[in-house]
Image 1 (tube, rainbow, N blue to C red):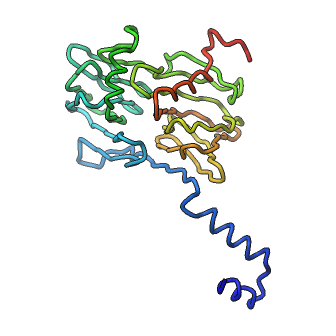
Image 2: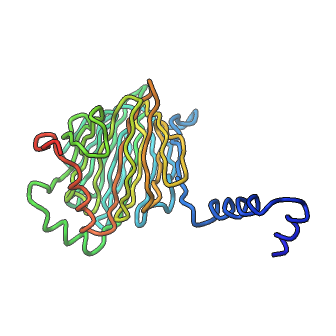
Length: 289
């Protein structure tokens, strides 16, 4: 109340006082914050390996790292059966070997070693810089049980695909000009699903909420959009990782002659929360509703 008296003495009206108080509340700890971090896309001179942690502590039981290898080099990453590791390749070329399996790595592809694979080996040729993200997610006891009970067609020694080869889907919150693809369907990795969204502006992804999951966005090549969450908004560009405030009403806008192209990553709090994915209608079965 002393503050109000001081402000009144200085001739500041009640409406202005209330605006100051409301502004203070809006910027307080209860407001959603859109956390975003840019990837360092150049390996420091003289170094062959680069690593940085991204969005530390943002997703429960999950460590996120950006790794980069400058060729010529061969590097090995050890894996643990208590965790699942997802590798998202964003730039450069190379090869990945897991046991007897060998895959050619290209930008905008994903690899997930499974079935007790204990290490993966990367080979990068001279003149290449391979940049990728490694998501290391702890599996709960229920996750381990669910893995055993997933359909046989969902069980892989190593799940690998290019984004452009993935099945398209439609969604009511997106315009007909938007191309969306399911990169990682449900029930392959417990409580995790991934997909891409691509459109030329002007366009938008409509406002929606999903309190049953934590969501990240990864900006892909030439992505240049604005992400909104409740009263907050931020620019979101290529090679950036962004955390949507859980439970917020959020949407994405892209301006004229700009591109929307990002990977969404859903980390469901419970298996039941995956019912949300039923809002995605495969193109082959979409009835236009």
